[in-house]
Length: 477
Image 1 (cartoon, rainbow, N blue to C red):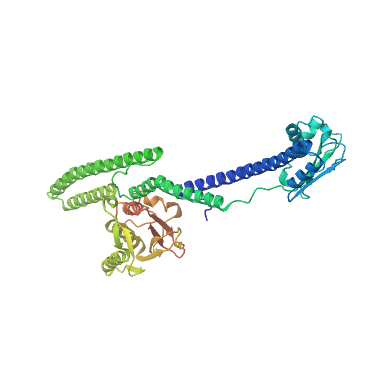
Image 2 (cartoon, one colour):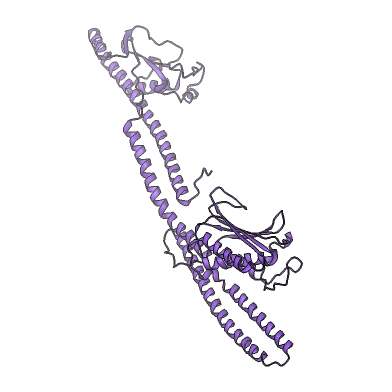
C-alpha cells in the first residue's frame, strides 16, 4: 500500500495541498497572535484612558463633584474609591513586566514624575503560575522578565494614583476582554480557499501529467512493435524535450527497420538465384549418389537461408495486434498437430477454457507456439498444452497481474539446468541432450522468444520434477 501518491498528478496535488495547509495553519497562528495583540492594546487603552481621564477630572473637582464623577465612571466590573492611603501596598510600585508597562504608560499620560505616586498591581489567573519578582531586583533587569504575561492571563488590574491634594484614587477593573473565538465566516473562507487550491491543483497536475502518460503509453506500444505517429510536444519544457527525443528515437528505429528489411529482401533475392541455378545444374550430374547429396545440401542451404531471413526480419513486428480468441487459436493448432501425429503415435492434448479473448498478433503467436509444440513432439514424444487466464492476484508459474499463461509439457529427457537459457541463442543445438535425427537450424526457440518478447511477455524453460521439459509463455494484458 502506497501512502505517498505514485503518479506525477497525485504527488503534485499532494504537494499543493500540503503547502496550502501549512500556509493556512501558519496564517491562522499569525492571525491569532495578531488578534491577541490587538485586544491586548485595546484593554490597555481603555484602562489608561479611564484612569487618565478620571485623575484629571478629580484634580479639578471639589468633594461633591468628585463623588458625582466617580458615580458616573463606575460601571459593571469596576471599583473606584478615594482613600487617604493607597489600596496597593508594597515596597515597590510594580512586580511584573505587565505592571511595569501599565505603570510607565500611565506616568507618561498623566505627567506623574514621582514613581511612588503611582502603584499598579495585577491579579493573575491561577493557571498562570508565575512567581513575583524579588524586591531587590534592579528595574532594568526586571523589565525583561515575565514578558509572556498578557492581559488575557490577568484576572484583574488595580491602580492607585495620588491626587494633587494627597488623597489616593484607587481603581480596580475586571473588564478585560479576550479575543473572540474564530468566526464562522473566517473558517468558511479558509475552507473555500483550500477547495479552490485543490481544484486548481488537480487541473494543473493533470495537465502536467497528461503528456507523460501519453509518452509512457507510446513507449509501451513501441516496445511491442506498434509504432505510432509523432506525439504532440506539449507540457513543460523538460517534458517537451523528452517527447522530442522519443519522436526522434522512434523515427530512427523505424528507418533502421525499413533499411534492414530492404537489405534482407535484396540478400534473399541475390542468394536464392544462385542456389536455384546450382540446383538446376545438379540435375545434370550423372553420378546419382553425388547428385542426391548435392541437392540435399542445396535444400539445407535454402532452409537455413529462409529461417535466418525470417528470424532477422522479426515478422512479429509487422503484424498489428487485434482481439483474438486465444483459446480457439491454441485448440486449432493442437488439432492440426494431432492429425499429423495420429500415424506417428505422438500425443497432443489441450486443456483450458473454450473461449478466451485476448489482444495479440495471432499469426506471429501461432508461429511461436507451433515452434514450441514442434520441439516438444520431436524431442519429447508428446505435447500437453494448457491455457490459463491469470487474475490480478493469481501467480501460477511465477509473476502476477492480468494476462494469459500457456504451458507446453513434454516427456523428453529435459535440458541441463546450465543450458536452459543458452538454447535460445540462434543456431545453438544441444547434441548431448537433444536428438539430431530431426535436423533443424537451431532457430525455433530464438524465433519463439522473439515473438513472445514482441508481445511484452516472457518465455521460460524448466525441467519438470517428474521428468520432461516445460515451456511457459506468459502474455501480459
